[in-house]
Amino acid sequence: MIYKILKFTDLHSGEEDKQKVLENVKSNISFRGSNLWILACAIVVASIGLNVNSTAVIIGAMLISPLMGPIIGAGFGLGMYDSELVKKSLKNLIIATIVSLVVSTTYFYLSPFKETQSELLARTSPNIYDVLIAFFGG
Image (cartoon, rainbow, N blue to C red; front, side, top):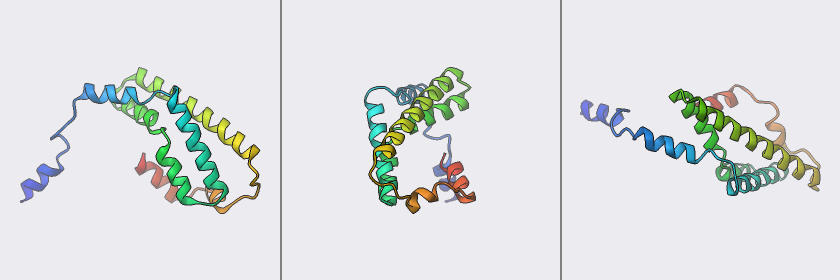
């Protein structure tokens, strides 16, 4: 019984082919074409969620956002000591950050909603739980 539990939780059994994983990670870090448009739409959805004080809309925007590709690429590159993958991932993450800032700034500049909502204010003062969620979620 104990052996079956240990075998089930063994991290080495069923290990993925490293080359396949590397190809998959590399294919998902790029921010060109459709990924940029999906990111821009996700930023607009998140901004609307912040404006109308809707947690569900903000979470929905997180689900459609393609930001995990470069984040996983940077982490995988660090884990594999692949400096080229880390550089490419960080470059794409910077591109995504700039696009996000431009889109959200444009949205909030043009938005008719000018009153600050509690959802927006809650994100301006992080606490230890936010740090723990970011650490264990990342």
